[in-house]
Image (cartoon, rainbow, N blue to C red; front, top):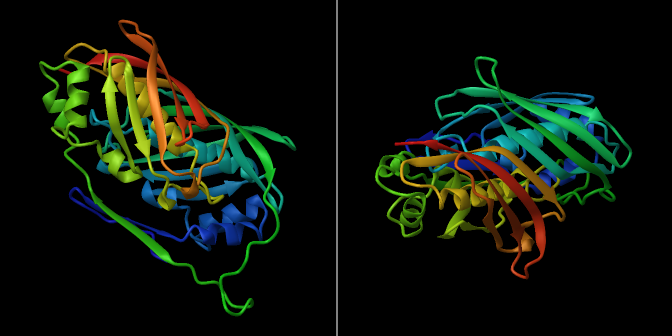
Length: 347
């Protein structure tokens, strides 16, 4: 199966294997054996891993290791690697460290994720390493941590995750005419073109935060590359508020056949950060330094359109706080979160 994602200029094609393959193989193995098989390449990668060029390279009891090749398709509006990429990596690593303790018929679901952003990353930062380690394994709740280090070995992010152990039922049906045959799973792909990641940075001189965001909403500035990569878009921006929407798709899926926990974290990081950006004076941008997300319900393609609105809670000269919730069309809350952001001069 070919899940390589070629990147030529601003054009990109993302490929992955039908997420039903993950459920089929997961039902037949305990957590440790399942993810070891994925690290060896015996079973397909998770869709989100293919989208973000993540490779699971090692899994032991209570430990996991990823490598991730950073690139321009991961950039935020100001030209840095989006905080959502940090969240996806560390939720994955901490989650697999937790999953390594699960028996056949069990899985782990993120309940809470705390992310600290220690150093910025760029598209030229190369390959980063993300490692997850279990702090305390329990029958119902497990705590695991994760760290990201850059190519020079410097710590750039760390996270703490709380995971609930769930029963996932009986064996999944085998999609083959003969139950003895190896099932055949479809390969998927999605192609898109990223806009100029430096456009907002170049437009910043002489413009306030809300002016820049309004230009993006009106189409006068391109959406950031990460929006096209993961499939979420800014809809409206006001004084201290920002709203994003996302249509769940299979390329956002985790190993359990639902939306990866890093995806709503990406929405919350975007909505809270842009809410703060909307109140910044000209010549200033923001950087998230701390993000907390609480997860209440799983999300699938059947959930329908998601909306995430961020609102400033406390505005400071340097440090501000905003919160946001991810809701469906009926207003049901799936994930909520809070971000602390630092303002800095960009022009």
